Image (spheres, one colour):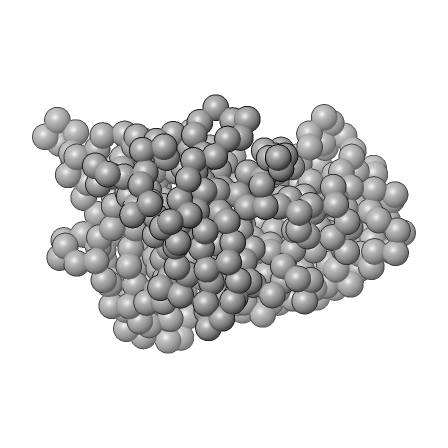
Length: 454
């Protein structure tokens, strides 16, 4: 019998925001009633100081890893995605600035001298961000955890250095965590060897990551957006929903962008190409939890989606499932949840290759895979209640079965076949119970050449 595993190799990465004004979340918070309010860098280019430790890395980074080249690739990913620019300089500085006392150096360091930042923490890295009174970023420092092992060649049991740095640079430019499972900015990172594969997928920015970066830095010419509020009925009174995940899928089923609602229920998706989109709203109670979105700013008090509600598709007042975006236009698309019983179908883990985890499933075109889903209520599902957002990924209904893992909730499996014609991107698993309750694993499947190290 094949040994089935629950992966515990997923560790939260951390972004710490400091200063008079703390960062606010993801794609929404650069506007207020008086106009532009920065939650980003206002200077360009951004001067990035490479610590001398990058040229002489400590032993927790695998020998012969080219750390400097890896940092440059990670910076380039964001430069290619949006109008942010970096200029590299070198420095002898080894340690990040202390809390509330920035030194004006935007440091990337791998020095063991940063050990006190992590203490017993297993987080692979930390980004410390400083802001001025207007909310503009004035400094950001990145340090790797000297207690964790890193590599650039997929060595099992290590973190992929490029994936870690790409995620942390996302924090450096002002982004919080994403609710899309396959996003580089999702709050967790798999170690190499999860699913028996190199953990390279977070090297490549998802469409969600790119939309978030473009919302802060552009380009906005020709792009479009969707904004609105998420409300529900509480004893006859409208109540805002805090910490809900609202995401958009394009006409091919790819996840295009996501946002987490603020305490006033607002969400905003920016930097989208014109076209047709389906909007989905759901509680954050799956592989990405609400408490993991941010420890500071607008989401500092977010512990769970409040009030919790069941997933649904729609665009609000016109009751249509499709939102049509035209160039340079923003569509106002409010949601109203008519009733809000808490979810009873809550998928929390996904998996493949006899392993459960919260990492995205890296699949290749033209192949068939056995997929696992675990969580409360999945044992109530039937074969005809499993869907994938893309018509180019098909579910074999006859393969549906219950599985056994050493977890506290039920597990199901089913086979899917990926068409050779599918485009790169992230796709969702859509579950529908016999009672009609829906749940989404947003961006659980990723199609990307990076999984092969290319």
